[in-house]
Length: 290
Image 1 (cartoon, helix red, strand yellow):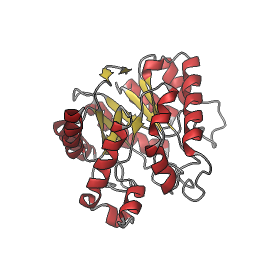
Image 2 (cartoon, one colour; image 1 turned 90 degrees about the horizontal axis):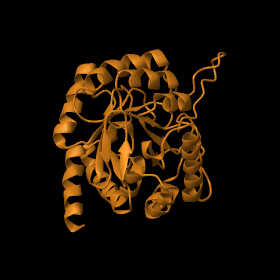
Image 3 (cartoon, helix red, strand yellow; image 1 turned 135 degrees about the vertical axis):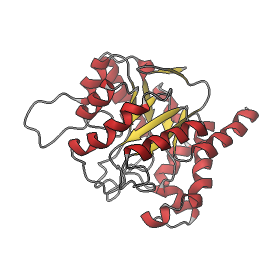
Image 4 (cartoon, one colour; image 1 turned 180 degrees about the vertical axis):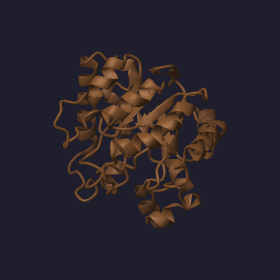
């Protein structure tokens, strides 16, 4: 099993670690820590040294309550970092949902588009007939793509979480959008799916996704899971979840690494994490008993 991307064929027969690089001032746990080009690139280099297989660079926060960032600002954050990160020798994923941003980073050599909207976002303020995200990805012909399930949208998703069987709904949605993308000419080996931990879901639903994660494999695509520093882990552990408390990352390290290992044990191919070195160390233990 492999994930075909712009420049790399990523072997998914062994667990892969995607290191998070938030070039943002307002991300929930690490906003402002890497929000300059220099700081972001230094963090990229550190994550690679720590064992990251993939870098995931984002210029817009998707925390609960986050408003849409203007395209111009997102590009100003992303492009200088992506331009240099593609020279570091590992696959570069870009966390964006805007078609224009996707096209711009792919033109710079990015390998993967990681989209919380699963290529469905539309600019409600545009009167023109814009290029869609699905068109950008299908016309590129080579990039990898991660399609995520989200209930609602970031600004309101936790005000009215989804109801019902979260696993069945996420599976139905992800199969549908992946198959629609294949119908546009994107080969199956370019597609990975993500059930979207924390995106419009209750604490109980998030853990239901973990407990029944194996059912998501029925979609037929590799799974990417992002449990790192999620508020559901803090809620279960009895930790504070305010943005100030959350920045003390040491308090959230053990639950995050534990959730990543459980996700891999239940069939995930890739885990998206902040704490790369510690996750890589834990995966070595998992691989030893396998």
